[in-house]
Length: 340
View 1 (spheres, rainbow, N blue to C red):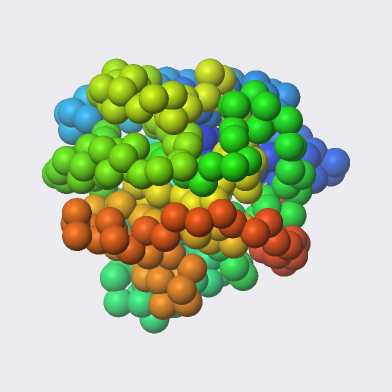
View 2: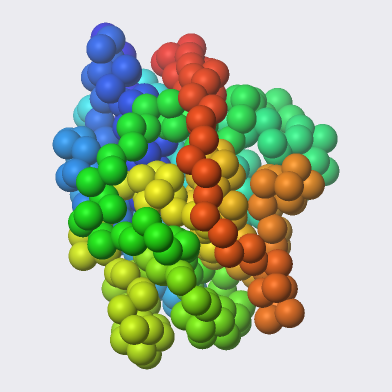
């Protein structure tokens, strides 16, 4: 029996690895570590995944980010000594990849955004595993080492989408009105390195625009608690048309029962695209080539200016079949197994 370590440092990673962990545990010993960031911990608890918690997100300050990443690396290093780990897997954890190197553990780094701060990943990982929406030649031009690059088919969201089961009880929990157009609104990350120098004025204008529409209901899903206070004036002055979930809900389920999604980029946008829900990206950083490809396919639209608000189409969505292919899941699982 081999030992595999999976480090989760953001909430989407819980979704990605949930069923991979279950499969690997049939034949291997699996350790799971996590960082307290976004909804990572509540999601782990919701799904019953056993984990050890190390650190939390240090916030926007760059010095704090470096310091706390190093501190978390040191804590992971102490934890990992003597555990005889054969392979580590992470989706972008800097402290995870650093600790793996110091422990002399071969590592797989997964990613789906090519403009991340990638020096550590390029230099310290043994294998890099990406969605095939990121074309190999494009990554090589950006300095990614060809000999480390490997790919799986589809979006990273296709790894866990086959296991989704819709839960209509969410409509009662959130108070959704079937007669209204349900808009899922998620602001951008305001403390991530790739959004460090970006203005967030656009979402305030957007919020005002959305609550002025007739027959809409907005499900506002903040990334951090402080965003509830930041946008309180729009939430409280919206004639009860803005809903803020009281507890962590399955993101896929909110996307499924929404008529359109407007989000500050990343996982939720791609979940919507994969689930045939109209989606508008308000991401203001360097555009991911994945999203640009989805735009070309007509599965995503960018909103960069107030003038772009006219792109938003307010209409009820017809619930349709979702691509439940397990190709991405099987490819990632087999790749991990082959490297142990």
